[in-house]
Length: 101
View 1 (cartoon, rainbow, N blue to C red):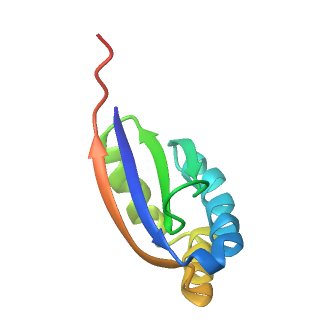
View 2 (view 1 turned 90 degrees about the horizontal axis):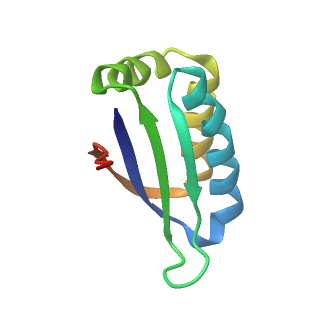
């Protein structure tokens, strides 16, 4: 199992647009076999940082999701929405494996 952690730098004046973008992606990750663990929006402190976490059974499953997402109409629409609204300034993606005991 791997968890993808995404740290977004967002435009704080476009928080509503970013929230809409986030809501588009939650069911899409699930549609491709992942489990979305949520988006985390700024509340206190930095007003331009948001986070996302989602899990796939393996890194190869994640890679398949990435490949397929670039061909999927709903995913393409979500990518285009972010581009059009410019709610995301930049992002960093990292991967983690869980340790339970």
